[in-house]
Image 1 (cartoon, rainbow, N blue to C red):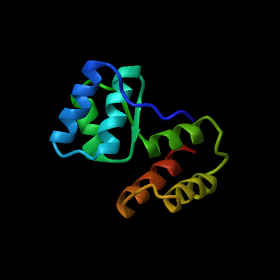
Image 2 (cartoon, rainbow, N blue to C red; image 1 turned 120 degrees about the vertical axis):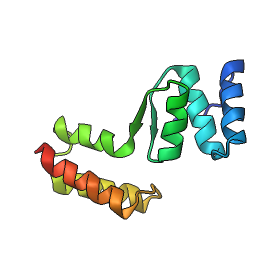
Image 3 (cartoon, rainbow, N blue to C red; image 1 turned 90 degrees about the vertical axis):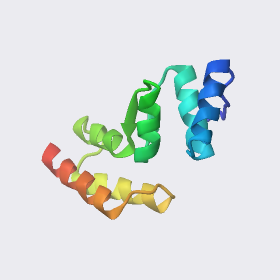
Image 4 (cartoon, rainbow, N blue to C red; image 1 turned 30 degrees about the vertical axis):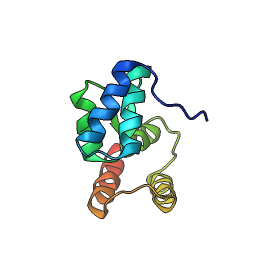
Length: 111
């Protein structure tokens, strides 16, 4: 993995604007870099996703990526989905109890 800061003037302005709006530094840098690299912004924070969408940056919820993995059979079962989600939460990913339950319900609907 390579850590990288946004370098383009427009991206730096996005970062500064997001910080001024009260978004966390990590999210602001990530959104600005996603804009600069023209890539998807992956998050699990509603405020950060809405901020990225304000700049027309394609976004995905972390749990959506896991759903994609389940649909593509990279995760072989809902149990494996839950184990993966729980492992990510244990490693520091914040997912509210409500959000976790909704994600698991959706996982069951995909099989």
